[in-house]
Length: 349
Ligand code: UFG
Image 1 (cartoon, rainbow, N blue to C red):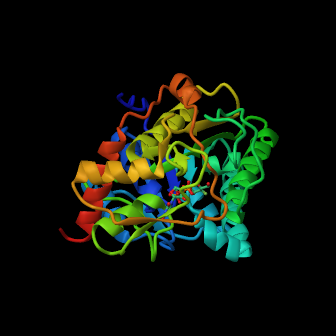
Image 2: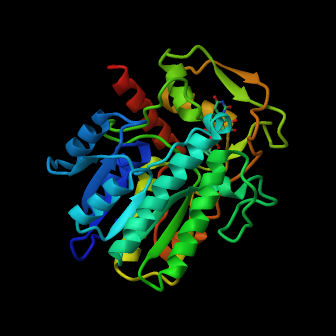
Image 3: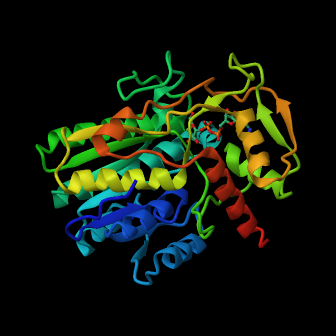
C-alpha cells in the first residue's frame, strides 16, 4: 500500500506532535509531501522524539512550537503564524487510572485544548480538523467486531468521557459552521510498536499502564514480572481480546484522512472511521508472540482483573479500507519486533 502524495503543498498542524502517535504521524505526513508544524508542551514526551523525526525524514527545518493548547492566545497565534489547512489534535492527557483520580484535571485539559483548537480554526475558516478518538467510546460492546454504527456506550473513565465529549463537540461545531469547517474522527484501537528505524517510539513516564511497554520493559529487565490482568474472561484462553495496530499503519491512516479532507473527497462534513486491523489477539497470545519473535523471555503471572477493562473489542475496519483506501498491513510479529528494537535502543543495547 503506497500513500498517494498530496498534489498541492498543504500545511498540517500537529498538536502533541512530539508524543507517541504525533511523532509517527509527523513522519508519515512529511514523507507524503505535507508541510508540518509540530506543537507540543512537552508534558508527556521528550525532545529526543523530535530529533528522531528530523533524522528519519532528513529534514532539519520542521517548525516546532512549544506551547500549551489550553492557552487560547497561543493557539490563535499559531493559526495566525502559519497557513494551516488542517489540524490533527493529539494534545491530551491519556492515562485512564489517573483520570479516575483527577477528573477535573482531565476535563479541564482535554476539553479546553480542543475547544481552543476549534475556536481558532473557526475564526480562520476553511480549516479541516482531525480528532484522535478511541475505541473506548464503544465501552463494552454488545457484539464484535464493532463498526462505526455500533452504538457508543457510557465511558468507564473521565479520560474516555473526554473522547466521547470531544467527538460531540466536533460534530456540533462542524454542523454549525455551515461548511466552513470539516472534521474527521479516527477511533483508534490499540496502537503499539515503534518506527522501524527505532529512532522514535513510546516513552511512558514511570510504570507503564499499557501492555506492550510493560512487556518490553519486563523483557529488558526494567520490571520484574508482567501481571496479566484476568485469566477468567469468557475468551478461549481466558485473557482479554484487543485489536493491536501497528503505530506506522495507524500513522498512515492520518495521511489518508487528511488527504481526503484537503482534496475535498469527504462525503459528509464530519466523518468517523475505525482504525484497527480487524484481528483479535489475546493478552496471552501477544506475550507468547513477543517471546517467540524476539527470542526473549517475559516473566509473567496471572493477576486479578483490572477495573474498567472490557472483555473483547476489535474493529471492523471495512469503512476505512473501502472509503479511505487505507488498510493495516503489518503483522503482529513485525510490530512486536519493532517494539523490542525501540526498547533496546532506549537501553543503549
Ligand atoms: N494488560 C495486562 N497487564 C498490563 C497491562 C495491560 O494484562 O500490565 C492487559 C489489559 O488488562 C488489557 C490489555 O492488556 O486486557 C490491553 O491493555 P492496555 O492498557 O494496553 O490497553 P486498553 O485496551 O486497556 O487501553 C486502550 C487504550 C486506552 C483506552 C482504553 C479504553 O490504550 O487509551 O483502551 O478501553 F482508553
